[in-house]
Length: 455
Image 1 (cartoon, helix red, strand yellow):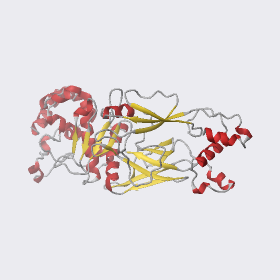
Image 2 (cartoon, one colour; image 1 turned 90 degrees about the vertical axis):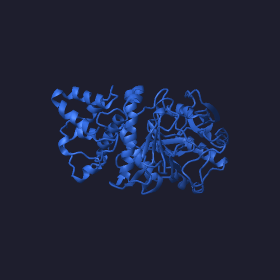
Image 3 (tube, helix red, strand yellow; image 1 turned 135 degrees about the vertical axis):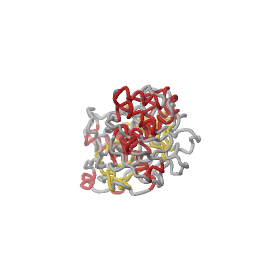
Image 4 (cartoon, helix red, strand yellow; image 1 turned 180 degrees about the vertical axis):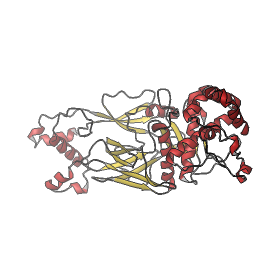
């Protein structure tokens, strides 16, 4: 940029008083552990990329891993930050370049520009020319360049085909549009529409990571789940997901976004990203894992170095993936409520509770979801029966572990009341007695009979 300014001063009188000062730093973070990566992820103002920002990606593929990074170690993270920003401590950092970025054009930009837009355009043009980065369509007449320089706002729509609901928007995605070191962001609404918080004059590249501040999807147990979008000027990103891994990611993301950011009937949220904590990592595995559709690893609540939740429903229907994700997130929320007491809670209490949350929350998205109609071992239907009064079975169904209608004489509890009843509960009968104390002695026999039916 200083070279460009020097060239302009030779022929442009208005450039005489212009000065180039460092506005941003181009930074390369080198996290050596998942914990160090978590330190970076806690700072929501860092716009991190897993590939260098001074290169254009030409090959196919949705994510990049630096070949110099040892196996088992997070790949390098790249970011452009304002020059006066305090960088996170505890992570090796390399300043790659000092930057002069006068033209970010963000909606919330309150910085006063010391250089006119006309001079900014001239500087950028000259800098691109002398570095060989002028694109073919920009090598045109002045009139054509004036048209090319018209500002445009990145926007678009991300939708998917759900096996049950049909075509729906993917709500809550954070979409990024980047040109060189400048990034504008937007979030999809319930229809999947998004509009970014700034404008560009030239081409930009779209991108999304299947993550939000509180959680991050992993492709399997380690690599980030990412999607590279199109590059262009004035071009919307309209992506309809019909199949494959990204449909899988989208369904898991929808369930996690629901549990973390939407109405969950006053239930506790799962593990939070905060000081000395980390994002909840959700591994989306494409292989089967026997009879297990999902796993919650309580060790992730300590240092957060492991994948907290693993999902194995790639070959299943969308609703099965969604409900399984809710199920495992409910384990995380239960842990957050009970902390170390969680390890003393009876398995039947744990699994019956999260099966009930799975049933209650999944029906908010899939109203006809009937995933709670069969009781197997520790995975009982007690939560649904404490809430509703319309459980109907047939004689043949009782052969598969169902119980008859007359044994269910309890209803009217809310899911938040049931969660409250688990605060200090460890045993099956202890849970029963806690509910009796909440509802009153008049319900003693009915609640006792219901719990006995599942023993």
